[in-house]
Length: 288
Image (tube, rainbow, N blue to C red; front, side, top):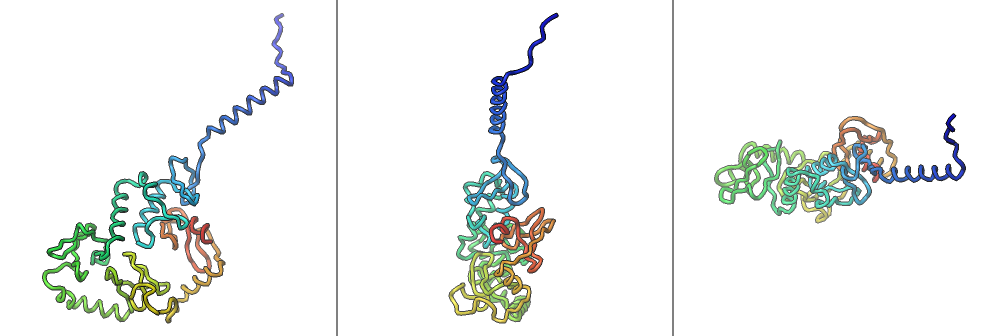
């Protein structure tokens, strides 16, 4: 009868086997791809699939592009930033795509324009670059809607002197309405601005800051910073809630917009049950 192999192992053999097993496990762990959680969608991504900012917040490429798109909607949001740290364009350029890169360049041109021109059509209001402005006719053609705007009076493109345009009945009615509603005119781009809520410091879409009471550049007048008869109850509730740091946050599903950074959050936001402010996860972590 053939002898059976001895499968029993001594203590030394068992220790060697354990050492090999531990080394194999450690080697496997070292080969694991590190994952990072996107601050917006909360999904996990590898380093090649996301951008990690200096503040250690991570964005997947799609949410990074959305952050940049949102920053282009208003000068107050541009350039895009996280935790008040600007996101370097050179670091994220390769993730944006040609169209977004072009729009980014157009926004830089807009902010550097001393006398920006915007489409007179209220439903459009797009910035009209210098390349779309005809010096001879003083007309600027909007690339978004195709409408012509007068470079001088900022009204609909017209022939001849601007005085006739300003004397138009519709223009007169609008100026009268603006006077009754106490709307203000931006000193830089001449856009009419209505304050819906907030203090007297207004930031126009063109980036200019001015006093809503007198229309002069901000901090160049002696008007009060707050109040002046502004008694919107919801505004003061928001101020008190923020100053006290007593927000009662609850998870709200569905696409919503963060009140601070202006970014559209596709999945959810946090909404305060007291003042109804909405925050994305990033702004809630940073501001509370």
